[in-house]
Image (cartoon, rainbow, N blue to C red):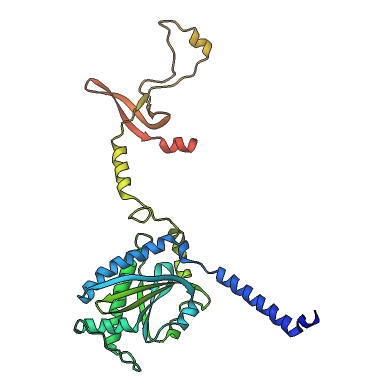
Length: 317
């Protein structure tokens, strides 16, 4: 048994290793998965549909956009793994008082520049490593970012009115610190294909940015209008307007003992204690709706509604 004994250093090493792995499990379990926000995936599906049309009009080319993946990770880990060369666009969401990040990778940058400047179809975009982006390239990519942010704004509109505003364009990830390195973020990768050219657009949204609409993003998808079925609402409203209800005119009400009722004979009179011209009440079922004046129009009895009683009746109840 003595040959299997562990030294003090080995025991300490095992203890530190177990504690480290335990901490890592706690940290990883604390990450919030995008799957807990069902409506967010619907939003980005709408982004794909909108971008497919918008980018075709923007480039006058056959463009296909698809979701390449949605994941949750820490902001610092993402910045350390941003593929170079790339352009990073910082945008603001003033209504949510926070920021987001949009990254256009190198292949898509060169493809967009090539397409917008009249490059021939069927040829891959030329890539020149070891140089900075020119003013023309930065301008064209900024226009692309504006288009993407406009569609992202429209996609979020059924959830919450928000306007994603472009702020600046960077090429160094260190200058795009919009969140703490340890903060959790949602990363959405969009694949853009233009025949045999294309690349990737990555959207990074910190959980702090989505916090103001988190309750809305937790909703389940129940219709084309993001949780509301307009067709059923319209049909129900039309049917309710055509529904017939019975409206009773109550002249007065008086309580009598049962012995008095049993002693009534033909010709007896019951005094209601109501003066002539006193207002009457209109009632539907057990609910009193209006106070009105009784009168006559042509050869029929009529009532003129004076005031509404539903609010006071509700408060009294």
